[in-house]
Amino acid sequence: PTNVTACHCLPGYYGVAGETCIACPLGSVCCDCTDPPGAALEIQNIAEQGTPCDTCRSGSRFPIPTKNHLLSIVGSDEQPDAFVIRCHADVNCLGGSANTCA
Image 1: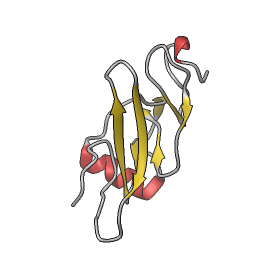
Image 2: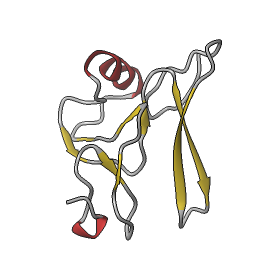
Image 3: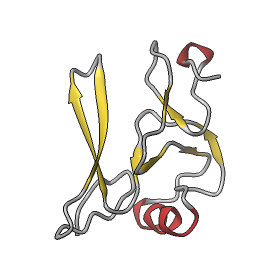
Image 4: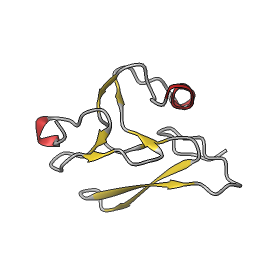
């Protein structure tokens, strides 16, 4: 399902409770891992295989940025809006849910 009223989104979609799931935007992945790999392994997995984990159990609450992208969340806690932004050429964005730059 792509509607969070069915408990959770499908891999490739993201959303929070009570909202319709949204397709994962360019520059991100939407996968909630069965076994969370930790930040370093997550970044490596995204770079090598395009997903943060070996097995996605569902979509994620928010998009997970890939390398050279950052996640920006605006709005309230009750109604957050997520945007994936491509980093400037002189900034090394690592990707992953840690959402940090080197």
